[in-house]
Length: 153
Image 1 (cartoon, rainbow, N blue to C red):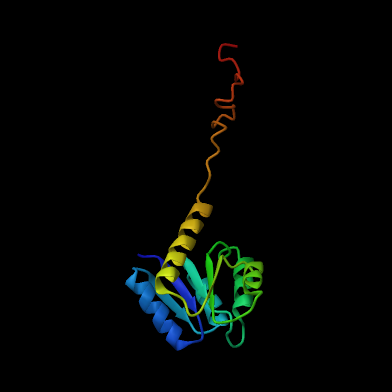
Image 2: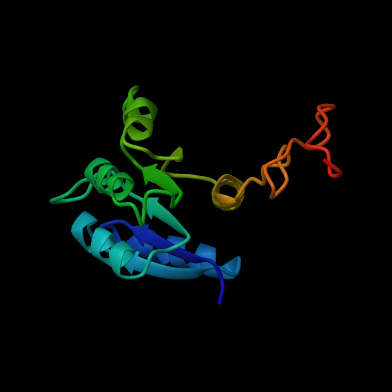
């Protein structure tokens, strides 16, 4: 099964555009037409990445992102905010609620796909467990120059 991307946008033309573009690049796509539906879909089947519009009726994208970040199962899913909203504080507002990337519509398709790939790679790196190489399983210091307990004592 491929990488699953949830697109949350109230514009049917954007659904079509995003779905076709992402599928052309091998992604599986789920669609939601508003914030509440997007949260419900994410909770039912957590995607690998969420593309989120800001200006939607009912629950806006800022609130969706805020709720995603409060849910332990969903908080690490990368969120790309993709909006036609024009505001000098857009990035500040999006990052304050936990968005990973912020893009404005219209967008160059190749830049969007690059952004999706970058967000997925960053998420994979951040979620990768980091081995503690400074200790061995017995709890002794390794290669620290400090001798461990004597074996013959």
